[in-house]
Length: 380
Ligand SMILES: Cc1cc2nc3c(=O)[nH]c(=O)nc-3n(C[C@H](O)[C@H](O)[C@H](O)COP(=O)(O)OP(=O)(O)OC[C@H]3O[C@@H](n4cnc5c(N)ncnc54)[C@H](O)[C@@H]3O)c2cc1C
Image 1: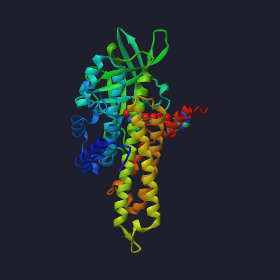
Image 2 (image 1 turned 90 degrees about the vertical axis):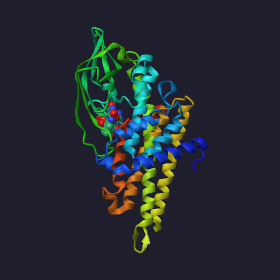
Image 3 (image 1 turned 135 degrees about the vertical axis):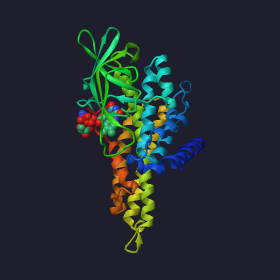
Image 4 (image 1 turned 45 degrees about the vertical axis):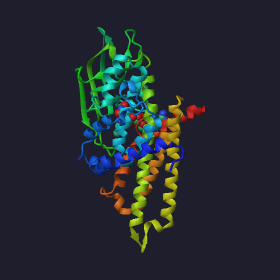
């Protein structure tokens, strides 16, 4: 039992766990193999409020806390990291519009989005600009009162399902100067958008991940999010919460790996003993559980600081770096404790091993998180 949580939070944790065990866990492996579509499940989770936990009530959310949010994401990810990642991703993308959007933009995009009637995709990375997002080449020029967008975005999660793209690009002023902006590009209202083929991914298979090509896409001026030159402020407001969400995904997946391994090693017998009776197994599992608990506390602390309105960029980076590192160590060790069966696609640990790797790469690689932390420490 975790004593930093209130009774109400522990009750909610139970409800989230029951939902995940009943609705998601039976399909964990089928989702990975593409045999079960998560779309109806995501719609159901939107309707149940999973994607609006921290969204204000006036925009259709539950108006609750980040602590509730990470508890939900953690429980969902015990059943399926990819599903939890989708819920976390869809929640986080609301923040730039809530922080920088006009009332019309909030009504037009956030309200139907929280209900699951509209889907969005965060569109920042480009073939030549990943960690160095400021190096992006996609441009927007203001011509006859409309932005005209040209460029290619890469690795966009949910590209194929998106109703609108939250697209970051360089505004080219008439004098040739460039400054970052964010545009809400509505797929149903704009022509010239092509979705490339889906990436064939190693893991975290739930939503499509694809290139998005903008070819002379005319976007109404009122779809500018915030101000010209402040595009990265909007992106960063997504990344703080995004990194917190991914940290919670890591904790849930790592806990699931430990739980699966405790069960397996208590059943498997070699040399006349259960694998769990070997001291190596006990010590390894004790180490893993301790590290998962440490990561969990970092996540809860960061969430509760966000609830108090404090700046958490360095803490969300620390949580993401540490939790993804712990997850990858834990799944590798837990797979080893499964022996050859851990290498078989019949066991969830094999899938967890593949899913885990992404958490060290997307929403900023581990190296980029360390760069942020070192900068915050004043190490230069
Ligand atoms: C499955 C998946 C889903 C994704 N979804 C989205 C999405 O929805 N929207 C979106 O915009 N993007 C998305 N991304 C892109 C993701 O955010 C980028 O892959 C990530 O930011 C890294 O960029 P890169 O792949 O170009 O790697 P690079 O930037 O080329 O990095 C390569 C290596 O160099 C290291 N490196 C780079 N710069 C430095 C430095 N200054 N110091 C030290 N090391 C450095 C990196 O850490 C990494 O190890 C997704 C990626 C994947 C794989």
